[in-house]
Amino acid sequence: MPFVSLFRLWSHFLHRLTAWNTGGEGIHSPYLFYLVRHLMYDRNTYYCWTDIESVRRQMLSDTRVVEVTDFGTGQGRSAHRRICDIARTSLAPSRNAQLLFRWLAYLAREKQGAELNVVELGTSLGITTAYLAAANKRLNVLTFDGSEAVVAEAKANWQRLGVSEQIEVVVGNLDSTLETTLHNRAHATRDRESGYGIDLAFLDANHTYDATMRYWKQLLPYHGNKSIFAVDDIRYSPDMAKAWREIMQDECVTSTMDFGDMGIVFFDPQYMRRHYKLRY
Image (cartoon, rainbow, N blue to C red):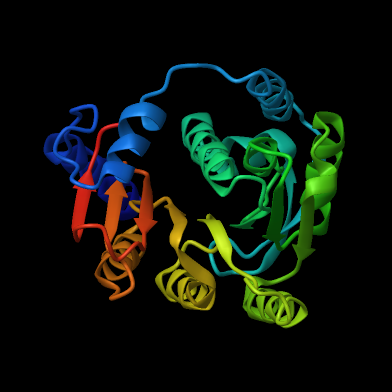
């Protein structure tokens, strides 16, 4: 553990030294430039963020104890944990969730009325899930988690926030549920012209190299040119840093953005193949 903690500190320090913040200048694709200049650095607060952050604060002060089955580190062990501790260690930072919200809202406008499919690996207490669903009423969010008790808390949060109808949650070990669920979705839509595709995927589950690469490969067949895949905690450990490097080098990937704690992947073949390290 001391080595991993030291790695995180050193890795984030190096990122701060080498990343740049130019408001989008130097990004060659007009589309990616727009995402950075007008969405990444957008300081407007959307109406639903206040309610979602209020629920986050309640989770951070909730001392109730639940039984958790945690596959997030590859152990699959059950333990009793306080909800406030789960919230403190498992929830994505608000700035990352809000960035994904803004990008999804933009994608929804670009789709002009079409439904969008979002896949989240790692539901936890459902705060990031709520951000993903709240970005537009046409979003269908499919989220995966390993713990029934934690998902029950997430469902209660979604009900309070009014986004539960847009969210479907699959409970169980991702090693058993992800590939099968995506296959069934694709099979169910095989007669539709567009088929099943993922517009945005957020990987925030099992933080090991093997699991991250396995889930990446299972999600990849469902990407499109305009899809956005986000990988959380890319500097969580040497294994996660290794997984991020391999994802960057995948032949399907054209551009990436590295924000230090989260990496974003783009697939459009029209983009110049570049990897941007940005301060955010």
